[in-house]
Length: 425
Image 1: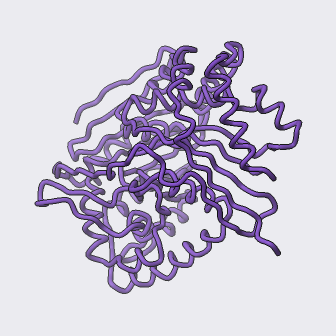
Image 2: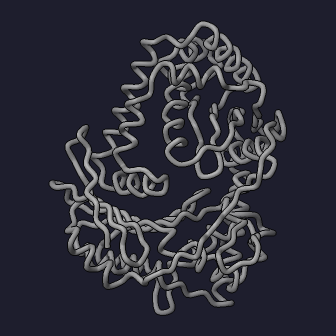
Image 3: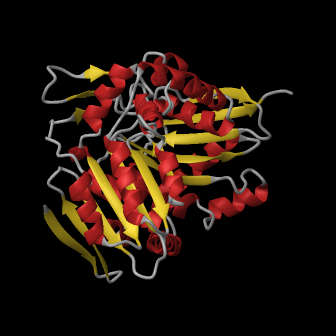
């Protein structure tokens, strides 16, 4: 077992990073004075991971879309009881999520930390899939998929991704489709579990009121050694150009919804995190609530409080996006492009940049006052190959030249506009 103490001069705090003999990365962040603990056990496995291979495979295989989300649903269900029931007995809150590139299971508690940590490590490492319980879940998830097909916010988002990307599986709903999940069976679930839930592909992150020594003793007792299987998951190559310039769907909603996405090359690791802060600061400085653009068009009535600008990013995708609702979504997109064109020539006001940069950094520092946020910070940082505190340094190091270089490089025509129009009642 290898232990490192990671320190921050900015916060005068530190945490423990452990490379466990089982292959698992463990981040332990004690927070004196807090009453609760939060633990999250995550794997680098999400909806985009449909094509992969290991050292034991002759070639890449492709599995049905939605299988990562399906697996998450089933993992709580053990042979003897449901993991939720065990957490409830101790008064802990537990949940899980599947995103495009991550699946994670977590709990928070004010007492019985050790017992809850054992429950977490136990059920995540002990899948129980049968033909019967797998088939039963298909109807539940199919109904969930159908519900989201009529959700305007969900559809404007995924329609937009589908318009930007030709091949990237990020364009597919995290839960998959009714047709794709019908292909999922017990054998496929075990195959994906044994591939992606290998401890060498996972991180356990704990923050708050807990004893690190107790946590490591429990890990020594509970973790099952895993060999590195040489996992490789790929995202298909993408053309430079967006797939479609404009997509429209009609659903029941009060106002039209829109999402404008600018297609960018994929970034990874530290470079992805660095650019995430650069582009967010640039977009917020140019179009955010403190910008002249926002003030003008808010007062004009073209946009409202729902208007936002930011970066959607993850393993295999990096997409600056503008979204909200408006009676004239095409005009919003036009004015956004006009403003960004103007700012490429005139420059973003330096005082606006300084305000937004300080706010971005302040929000990041503020997250260190929440045990759940710190635990998630640590897991996500580990997945990106950086430390928790590197986020602070990268945000603090954003310069005016950085944001102007980002703005200058933006191809305003390589974009897609997704619109949900109100359905006539």
